[in-house]
Length: 292
Image (cartoon, rainbow, N blue to C red; front, side, top):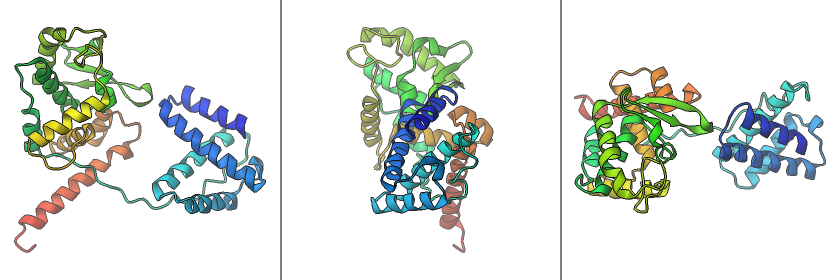
């Protein structure tokens, strides 16, 4: 089974362009299944629904939660679909297996007032403060992942078109528009404040040493500013991404546009924000309806 797994992982990397960590996760799941199959004395061509059911029981006894079990089953589905596609198997034994039920947790979202309070916290007349305000503005203006933010380079910004070129998951490129105030802020940062860091790289956001700011550095800064803004719950870069998406939907954006802006390969990942909207509307209804 080792050669088949290697071929599948190569397919995920080269053909589907998945991120390195995602491919590693698939590989880990499949190697764990191979060990189980070896201990069982089975072979790949003899795997059937019963074999996979026993494997699910095995994972449960190992203490895996529903989310981890669902990911393992997803890895196996993809692998066996690939085997059928390559005509190494006649059919997939995982096709009819149901995934464990998952409780879908709604993302944490800031109100517009909280976002404004957060953005106003950095002190704008010093280099670190101006950098931080620009950084927070881009996170919210574009719905960026923190990894996308820290990897932004100077050539990725087109001030005339008001666009950012973003390299997302699986090295997928997308262009995200910036509103006018974000363009002005970023342009001012690049022209007047970034040179004060003594740049040693073309990365847009730099640390005190002139090197690219790390993801951990962004998390720490954001957590500090959130506390200073009086937001008494955990705030991460992804919270601003969720807020960006939710506020766009509230303003009338459609799901397809939002999917493109967020860089989601599957629109089902974008649909979670319609649930956020529904939950907030229900909460407002309960709070203000006279018969509630």
